[in-house]
Length: 378
Image (cartoon, rainbow, N blue to C red; front, side, top):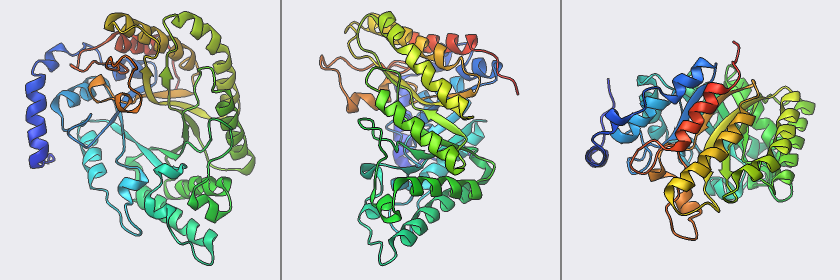
């Protein structure tokens, strides 16, 4: 049985349909996921349960998802502050709706995330919690309870989890602390427990460490910190299967070719080091900030596409990478506009489709990069 929308969602559905009535007829002939699957990969996108954003309840956005995606990830709805808003209380309603829709449409869904190792993104009640006379025991209880509640609820319906997100401080390469990790006696112990709990509770799932170290200049310290963390996992026997590479790319100016040449060797060395340790790779949150590019949309779109194509050509050359996930399909709902608007006030254009749901050069760049990537074997 299909999911019945709420009254608010129904209003949003009608508005979206009126805004873009001809979207289906304008959809590209071959979807990005179909292109990816021909090479043994998958393509997908972030999605929201909120009908005012990039939601499966928005008919126009849902059409993009059906056209191009075989894999979805919740933008926010599985994060701890959403599913665990208070001690001992869980709310899975939004994610349940999202997962049901993805399954009805033949799409897999990733789990994002079980532990975001940043104070500002931890539930407020955890940061303010009194851990009592045995803080390490109480902190471990809280973390295990949360991870088991999520992974046991969804069983084999979720086959890949970002178990830990963003534990490395970009400026120093050191590990982030939260009230939880301080109570447990350190971040390594906290992260290790998260992965071990996930492995015990979801033994068939792919367990991923996810972070936004990137190939642009200024990220060397961040990359080095991630490598140390990954080395530590192997040394301690922590069950981590893959590195999630968020891929929030940032252009630096109109000469994209020059910046690409300056960046790709260091990026290859990083990926070589990761895969040499036996880790798989995922592109988990792909989009492109059009910094330094001209205000004129056509030139800006070309610069974004060329930059993303070069990045993907390098990154997809690693056969241990199987999944590519965009952090949203249309500029209309991208998080970047609110996070970092352009100084010239021109609307950001970071996604494969524009605000009117029309395919952009970035979509074509992704399609070509997927089509020309090395064949993955089973």
